[in-house]
Image 1 (cartoon, helix red, strand yellow):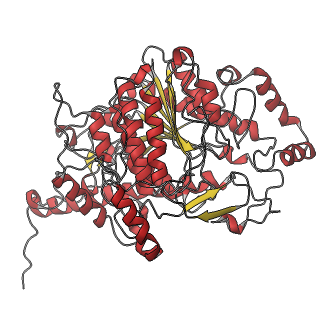
Image 2: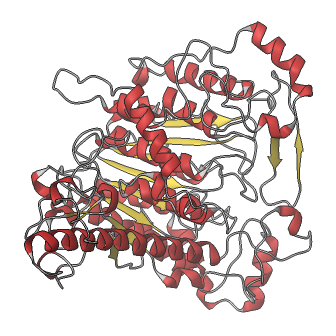
Image 3: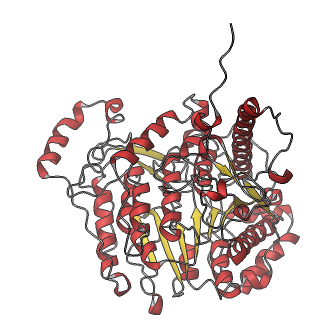
Length: 607
């Protein structure tokens, strides 16, 4: 029996075609390489006498009151970096696998053999472009901190173990010190400065990919599996305006004259002021987006009087460091440049965060249009974090990152973006979340996340969901210049989690009240009066009465399966009956309680 020849190259499933997706409606979906900064010297910041535990806790119940376990430890950085290197190998393998199949098919028809070249003109494909890390200088750190603080921290290199242990004990659950702590903090700050220099150079702004650029040839890119385009090192497309900084210790709690909350130097503030001073020709406005579950009080202190830095912080109000009310909006010419989207309770999930982005954060960023976006990427709002008490999923971190990039950069992606690691303390949670953030920065669909591989899904469910959204919800119309509105585009990225409607029934009621309180404050600021920020209306009274009368009759499993109602999204529980989780930062205590629709934590009387 003779075998029929394979289909011609023009009809194979590996041809150079790509469907539209919510993250890129036009042209080819391509992998955009990202600068990656990581330095093992930052792992040397550890408690004196630190012994790595056999198993890292996944719940605070596993930590004894007298246990010396430290939440902020070197393993946080190591597990994230290992996951990203695995992601890099997987993406490169898929590209190589498709290239082999394409050449085998073409060789059958043309008689040509398989090429031994590993890439265009011998150039290897790249996913991450590694950056070297140097310690920030004293002059650079003094952009955000006092000289007295710098000298005091620098002197700790000469302290004895006994002195360091005594100081750490006095700051238990807040800070610990070793002789390498300040050097690690200087490396973290210097790493962000290297990222700023890399992405702000005019030569690294990545051009828009065109269909012609996908042709296989010298200096071009090649299509990877399922339409990913992997640029070669020799092509202009390998240049990027995005950088990912895996740094520790974190920084957004560090004040100008005081270290606190695991933080020594506020690296993001140093980077923002450095960019304005060093790259003044191209960087006039900087935006800082902080989605760590704790308020970045150090970042507030360093930027609250700077009219060139817009700081937006989404956090829980009432937990450590007990700062960040919505009424704290900046002073003088910087009035309205300090934005706090504050939750009065824990338990906030994808729907609540998507609503905050859709109704407030994205319109503010779209109006401001920064020349540089710095993301304080805390992962402690994720479901399962030891101390965060919120319920974000890795998939939402992907959508949130993509929305932030879309709203400031638009289709051309010309606005530099630097994403810096902040909090996140559960070792089996933070790799998943940072992998999702990285995929968004690489311009890859979430279906390439390793979670789909481990579950045997291979992205099929996510791909089907994307196709349904693309076909049923057309992209927003073009504006007068023929470009798609970046605000509508970024909001569409979140449409699987939240959709604005007249009567939103998917939000926790306290979250709706929190957002309405914030929106009322923002609308009263002259700088933002032109924005059409709308109040979120609650569900009809009849729906509330019906829900309250039936909530006790539903099991927790049943509440976990629903779609969350109109305005909700995904596999979220109903907002009225979702359990609230209270966790106190730095204390080994936590509990759960159910809250009524109208219960929320007290706010300052000024509100």
